[in-house]
Length: 360
Image 1 (spheres, rainbow, N blue to C red):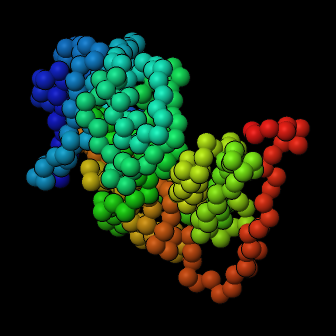
Image 2 (image 1 turned 180 degrees about the vertical axis):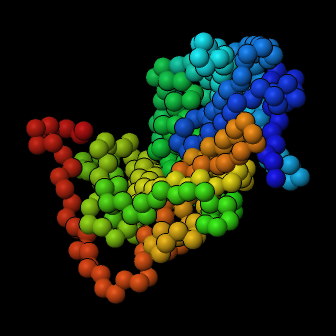
C-alpha cells in the first residue's frame, strides 16, 4: 500500500507538482504548545514550485491509497528557505504554523478582567487577536477567575498560561482557538502492536523525579489574616508532595491550580515514544495502546505529541511521544514481592518567609 498526500497553498492544489520533487513532508502537533507546525522539503533543482508568500493559507492531508485521507494540518506559511551547494544540490523548505504568525495573535494586550469566566476572558482576547472561532470544552467554560490580567502579553502566550492554571490544553488552528480539558476521557485511541504496525519503541513506564503523591497550593485569607492550604492526592505511590511556589489570589484559583498540578503529576509519571505505520487517527491527548513489547511496558499511554513524516518513495510513519502510563504499564505482574513505599508526609511545610511580616 502506498501513502497518499494532498497539499494546498494559497487556494491552489500543488499535489501534482509536488509528486516528482517532494523529498519529505512533516507535520507536528504537541500538547502544551499554542500551535502545530508543518514543513515541506522540496528538490528545487528546476525551481518547479512557485515561491509561496508568507501568510499564505496551507492545508495538508495524509493517508493511504484506497483508504482515503484526513486533514492533519491547516495554517499559514511562516518561512520559506532556499539552500544549495555543489555537492548536495538545491533544496526549498517551506515551513508553516497553525497560527498566522503575521497576525495580531502575537501582539501584546493590556487589559484585565474582574470576576470573569474563562469563556469570557478567552473570547474577549481572541476578538482582539483576530481569531473568530472559539471552541471551549464544556467542563471549562464556567470556571471563573476573581482577577485576570494581560500586561503586554500576546494572545498566544496568555492562552498557554491560562491553560496551565486550569488544567487545559490550548491550541490555535488557523482562525480557530481550541481550549480542551487535559487528560479527559477522549474516545480517540490508536494501537501500537509489535508484529503489526509498531516499528520501534523507547519507553520508560516509571519516572521517579516527576512523581508526587499529592499537590498543594496556598492563598492568603485577608479576612481571617492567615494562609489557607488547598491539597489534592494524585494516587501515585511516592512520598513527595508538590507545593506551589507562588501564592494564589483566592480559593477558586488555588483549587484550579491544584487540580492542574495533579493532572501534570499524573501525566509525567512515565514517558516514551513509539513509531508506527502512518495513522492520522492519532491526536494529542488521545490514547495509544502499546502491546507486544514486554510485561510492565505494555499498556495505555496518553499521547503528548504527534509527528507525521512522509518521505520520497511513499514511506509514511507516525511518531508518538507518550506520557501518563496506565492499563498495567509500569507494573510487571510477575513480581512476587515488592517493598512498600513509606506513607506520604502529613506535616505541612512553612508557608511564609520568616523575614517578611506581610502576605507574600
